[in-house]
Image 1 (cartoon, rainbow, N blue to C red):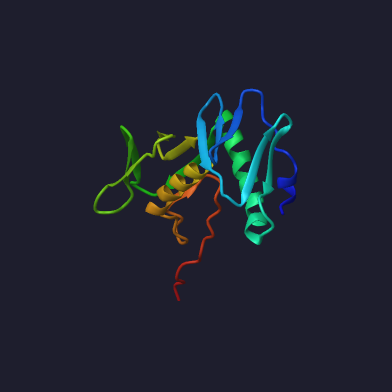
Image 2: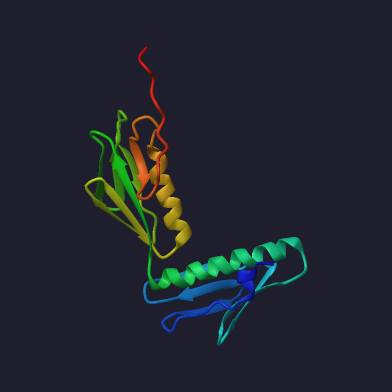
Length: 177
C-alpha cells in the first residue's frame, strides 16, 4: 500500500468532499468534479480529511489506494486553483487562432488542423503560445498531449509544438564531406 495513502488528505475550508453511491464528488470555488470509486477501494470523509484504504486484501486493492489518493489530491487542488499547461509553437509560418470553441492550427500541412476544446477547459492563444487551463488534471494533460501530437517537435531544427519547459534533444545533421 502507498505510504502517501496512509495519511489523511487535508480538505481546505472552501472545499467540500462527499462520497455518495460509489462516486467521489469534490466541490470548490472554481469547479465541481466527480469520479467513480473502484469497488476495491474504500474512501471515507472524516473531520481531519479524506482517508483511502483498500476494501479487501488483494494486490489490485493495494495498488489502487495510492492511485485514488493521488486522484483525490488532484481533485481537491484543482477545484481551488485550476491546472495549467503551456505549449509553444516553433517554426516559420506556424500559426494558431481561436475560433469560438475551436483551435485552428496552420503548421505546415496542406490544410488547417481544427481541434475543439473539451467541456470544462479553457484555452488562450497569444501569438505562438497556447495555454490550457482546467480543474481536471487528467483532461488538461490529455488535451495538451493532443495539441502536441498535431506537430511534435522534430530533433533536427526543433520545429513543432512543444511544452513550455520541454527540452528537445537536437541531433546533428548531415556533415558535408
